Length: 167
Image (cartoon, rainbow, N blue to C red; front, side, top):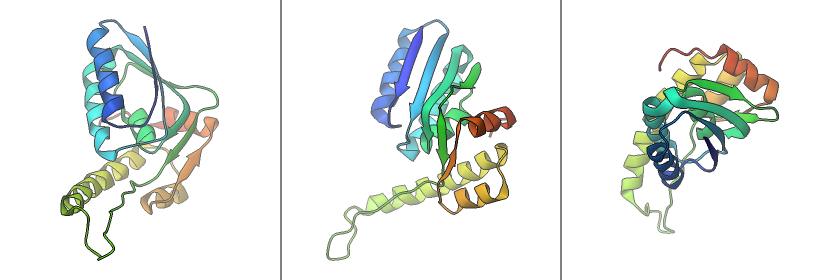
């Protein structure tokens, strides 16, 4: 059985993946590519991988960016590989707020949500980069919010050197 995931990390893509897991009772291969998405959905995806991962062979392809990068490396699965031509990109999470022309926030609850995500995301980013074999410049760039890109060979080295102990 095969599941093909080439989507943004969000509630809709999670629902589709979750429904597949609920209807498939055999081991399966998941082809996974994502250019990122909602930071607050990362723990939701990882929870599903924790429950279903013993029967998933995860194959990263095309783009493993941002939230997709984090999910790929942190996913607890039976087997994990990077396919040729796959690229990766990681950075500290980025968020924005919408202001009215009067200078007031559109929705004050967004500030609370963003602060919560910021605190959780920062901790997750710091833990993840400790588990990856990155150099000092790459770590500094990521922690500073900059983008760090990885070609196929670099992605293979990251996967090989990844510390598999749970975060």
